[in-house]
Image (tube, rainbow, N blue to C red; front, side, top):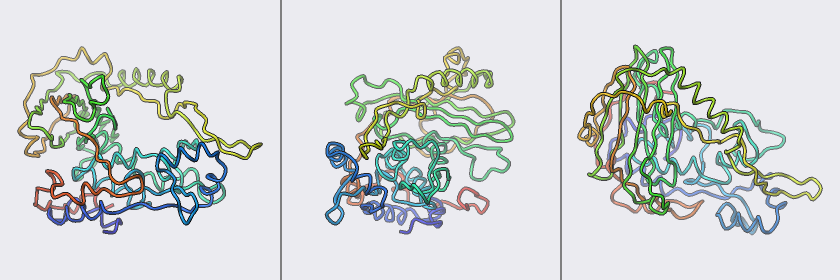
Length: 390
């Protein structure tokens, strides 16, 4: 399977059985080592202690007898400008959002973490370090930013909308709470801001149970006046999961909420609660060293949709939408402020795979790739679906 522009149609027009055959074959794909000059120079200018840590973590392995950093297919990005967007979308749309999360949250070479560890505050033009050729301020590899809002948080323009009238609310969740525990995003339009936020609740204090516990997921989302929304929720893995929907009787003061949440977030950023370290170069000793120093960038903040003042919100009665969710039925909604609660959501252990630059035998050797692969239907592709034409 070539990860190119044709992947834009993958989730819409590939027949169900073939869809899963392609996915199984894709999970066979492995990463490789990288012989880039800057990375090789880096490895030649770090201490033996640091090198041992990188080898132990799987970031570094031998390439023709020399230590080299590695491209990771499933714990980083082994894709370029075109395939980044579609690889993440295909995984998240077909029941493998946890694998997409693992790619985006990976560490080491060819990951956002690699850029941050080298003090990046903007996207680079290449995944590798370049001191003299490639730009350090270039959006070429930034397609995962769209995926973060559309899939990790769960808001995007509905594929068939015009003029930003309708948004699709489709949050996806990790298998394990050890991966990520909350997300939020805003989709701006001429009609106003669509917004969503979700979080795990009732998480066990003992983090070892974050791979197996039953928890609650609370989702809040906002549809601006004269706009509409389409709600789509992922299929629960447990039949014990119950899902309810309710709406606020009055839309809150969004401007005030945003301002208050922004002020609180700025205070947290000033406290530097973000990315915890960076690699720095000692010009005298001509060696790289790891500096433990937290930054503003990456500081976690609460969404305005979970601002404490909203605890006083007056809500409508709850509607049980468990059956609709299990049948994968989209729901159309009008302007308003909504809350969804998924009780008894089952957490699971993440798939391990065969190492950082290995593949995922648990999937390409499996006869069961989940509920999305049990559906053999072919989705109809709409010619005006701009999301899949681009």
